[in-house]
Image (tube, rainbow, N blue to C red; front, side):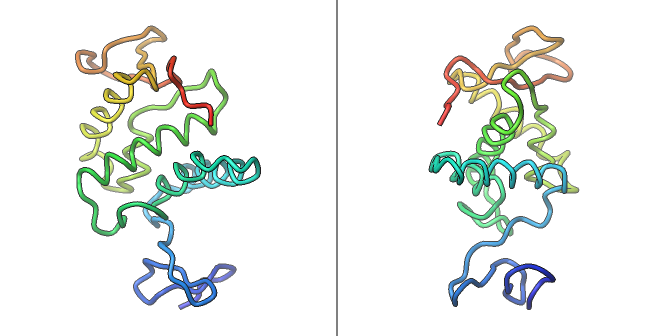
Length: 160
């Protein structure tokens, strides 16, 4: 099976085939706006040869790590953390993301059921100072905050 303008795919669509080797395909459930951001960050990371950033982007896209078609909770947690880092890297340093952006990227149309997990992953990253959780522009503890929050780069943000 070949997609127009793309590499050959296996019949189930889970892998692309390049020079006879199979590679995990991008998760087709990622909404287009988020896919575009993730791919743009992947290309930027490749240009500057930032291996950690490339890894995050590939995991966020579902191309590395646990297969997107049979996720486990630990695999989803790893992928969600990579999505947070990748989206925040792609956006300007003073911009934020919403935990729902993370759930939508990993869960596709079924994203709402992943919101609790997305908030847990964000809280874990906040505990490590990788992100800062904000509500109405002020830092808050995600475990006690009610209502919508935003995620920003934290004091221990990994630049590379």
